Image (tube, rainbow over all chains, first blue to last red):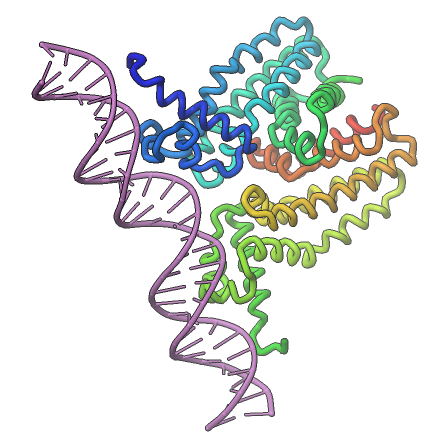
Length: 195
Length: 195
DNA sequence: AGTGTAAATTGACACGATGTCAAATATGGC
DNA sequence: GCCATATTTGACATCGTGTCAATTTACACT
C-alpha cells in the first residue's frame, strides 16, 4: 500500500498503454507488456488475472488519466443544441486517436472473450448516452429534423462517430485528424438537422 | 479433374460458407470446416494451404455464386446520378448480410495475417471504385454538393456503407435490414447532395 | 540480529489452434 | 494386378494464454 514498490500495477498499465499505442493495438502479448514493465511474464498475472482484464484495466486507467468524462461533460457549456453537438463531436473525436490502440486490442478480443465484449459494450453505451443527450438538446432547440425520432437520431450519430469510422478515414484513407473531425461535424449536421 | 470425387474443394468451400454464416464468422476452426465437409482436418490442407487462403477462397466463391459484380453493375441501368446512387446503396447493402460471416472472419484476421489483410483491402478497393463511379455520376448530374470534391465524397460514401456500420446498426442496435438501407440512402443523400 | 510476509522469479507444464510431415490406406482407370 | 491420386491416421512443432509450485528477494517489525 505504501510507496515501497513504485506501484508495479501502474507500471504495468502504463507499459501496456505505451505498447498498445505504438503498435496500434496489434500483437501486444503478455510477455511484451511484462518486458516493458521490467517484470517477468508471470508477475503480470499476479496483478491481472487475464489479458482481457489487463486491457480493460488499461482503458479505465487511460480514461481516468485523460479524463474523458470531464472532457465530454464540458460540452454542456456550449449554448444551443447545434453548438453542443459540435462540441461533443469535437471532444469525442479528439479522444479517439488517444485511445485507439487499446480500443483496437479490446475490439479484437470482442469476438472471443465475453469479458472484453462486455467492457467494450459498456464503453459504447456510455458514448451512446452522450449522443442521446446531444439529440435531446437538438430536439429541445427545434433543430432536430422532424422525420427523425430520438432513438434513430441517437443511433445514427453514434454510428457516425464510431471508432471504426475514424479508422476507415484516418487510417485506410489517410485523412488528417482535422479533416476527419470537420467531416463528422458536417455529416452529423446534415443528417440530424435541417440544412 | 474429372468428376470422380464430387468436388471436394467445393464441398469444403460450401461447408466453410455455411459455418461462417451460421456462426456470424466467429470461432470457425479448420477442424470444424473439415467435419462439415466430411473430411479429416488434414485433407482441408490438401486443398488450401492455410486458414487465410481458405477464407479468401470462400469469399471469392460466394462472390461468384451470388454474382456481386453483376448486381453492382446493374445499378448503371438506373437513370440519373441520384437514382444510381440509391440503386448502388441498395444493391451493396442487401449484399452485406449475405456475406457478413466471411467478412467477419476475414476482418478478424486482418490484424494478424498479411494475406487476409490484402484480400480484404482488395475487396474494399472494389467497393470504393463503385462509390467513385456513383460520385462521378452525381457530379455529371450536378447533384453533388459544390463544396465536396470527388475524392472526399467517395471516401464518405464508402465509409457510410461499410460493413462495420451495418454491424453497428443491425447487430448492436437491432435495426431491421429495411430500416438500415433506408437510413443509408437518406444519409448518403443528405451528405452528398443538396437537400 | 532474526523472523515473517508479500512480491517477484524461475521453470515446468497444460491447453487450444495452426500448420507440417511421413507412413499407411482407399479408389478408380488402365 | 498396377499406378496415380486423394484421403486418412497419428505424431509432432510452434505460439500464445493461463496455471502451478518452489524458490528468492526485500522490506517491516520486534
